Amino acid sequence: MWVSDMCSPTLTAKDLLLIQQYEGSAFGYTDYVPLYHPLLGFSYKSSWTTVIGDFPGEPYRTLNPISVTLEQTGDEYLARFQEANIAMTGRTESEALGNLAADILDTYELYSAEEAHLGPEPAKQLATLRRYIVEC
Image 1 (cartoon, helix red, strand yellow):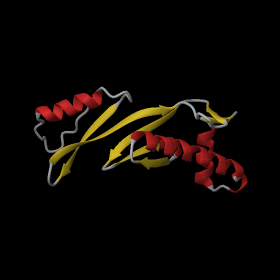
Image 2 (cartoon, rainbow, N blue to C red):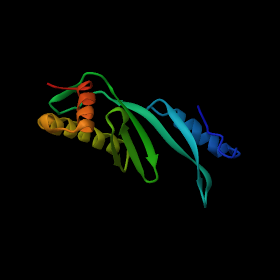
Image 3 (cartoon, rainbow, N blue to C red):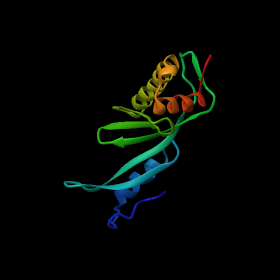
């Protein structure tokens, strides 16, 4: 576990309990960064990594697992596929991850259909997506 030493706040037993609960998450790696809240003092922002391993019900499959970073941002969750520069939000972890998976496929389909007319950044995104996704 990594905890930032931002102004060296004193951790309470409740803080440590919350950290231990997050470390037990099924998503794997978790990073804690203290954030200042004017009414609550220090709280913790959490991010973790998971993968998209398949696209159930879609005519695509993954060649390699897609590494996704999930982060809680206030009342929402942000799911990010950093390598392809694609991110989506949702009210829950599952919704954010589902929205990201749908956007990855939408981007793949759109850019594949318009490949001859893509600029440098979309062409780079399509090349990245092709390392991860193939049509069945």
